[in-house]
Image 1 (spheres, helix red, strand yellow):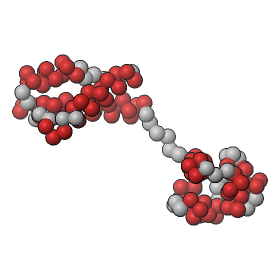
Image 2 (cartoon, one colour; image 1 turned 45 degrees about the vertical axis):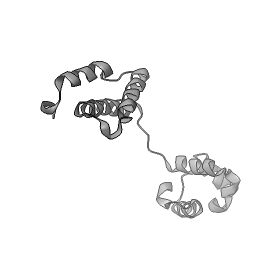
Image 3 (cartoon, helix red, strand yellow; image 1 turned 60 degrees about the horizontal axis):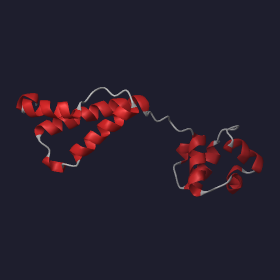
Image 4 (tube, one colour; image 1 turned 60 degrees about the vertical axis):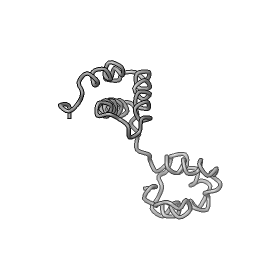
Length: 133
């Protein structure tokens, strides 16, 4: 595609946006702002603008991959998040776990969730029991 680009226009856009490997949050924000400006043009992007946009996307994706990796949620993380989202307390789940003591141990990470508890939690929260295993 580079052969079909207007080199003078592409060079002007590169000089204007100054794309480079991102090392700081400030540089990340700056390039996100440049992407927003280009995206605001909608379908009216020139071939040169599309090329710069793609370059910026690669740089941003690389930075995000290195700095914003999501860690996998544990069954306990999922349970705690569902409880928080629904405003539930430990006492609200005693029936699922069978006793206050077991509910406390599970919710505080001292005991893992059993298969039968995972099934009951899945039914209670209307989600797949596999989230709790």
